[in-house]
Length: 269
Image (cartoon, rainbow, N blue to C red; front, side, top):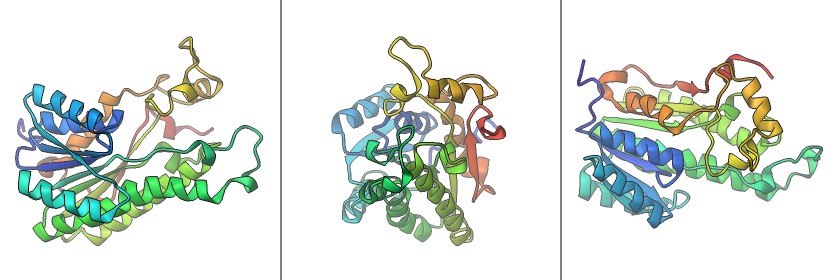
């Protein structure tokens, strides 16, 4: 049992590993023995994360890549294979929202710009799951071994006010996860999603907190509907990522969407 979560034979690719949440997932995989490839567009943040993994005794390398460019992902996949071996774990942690696709209070949904909607879908669905799953999933299917972990969102399960495009895109990520799980179930590749609840990070901190550290109106509303009465901490995503990455620990788990939300999804707004 003590070796149930060891990942020494795995090559883990974390797209969006330069971000706060994706980076901590990469650190968790490295801590349990995986060789970690961190993909992103910010070399400074990527190399900093590599150093943190190496200082903890892990093995990691940063690769510059554009998740919306199939040729870029294919080239990086070949480089990773030469450096570490065939990728066997893929964490799709790239994503985010656009201010132009967010409806302010009282705004008219009918005026939401189509270009902004498309940008959010490209960022979260195409680059955040579809293209990476195609490019790295091809190698996993060929090897008959792999675990794909898509990072969805609580808003993909419960459509939240204002972030309509983001919520719809993340719902599509969950649906694609279910499709791929069924498609590759007999090919040795498991596909699951994680839906984080509310985890303060660079992109949403101002939405949740005032400058003095108190909750905004929206932050307070979220806390009021979270049974654990707090926001999540990024490190609280580590356990489920390692579990889903481990063939020994989760070999019969596919097509699941795991909510890490302090109980938020058990309530209604």
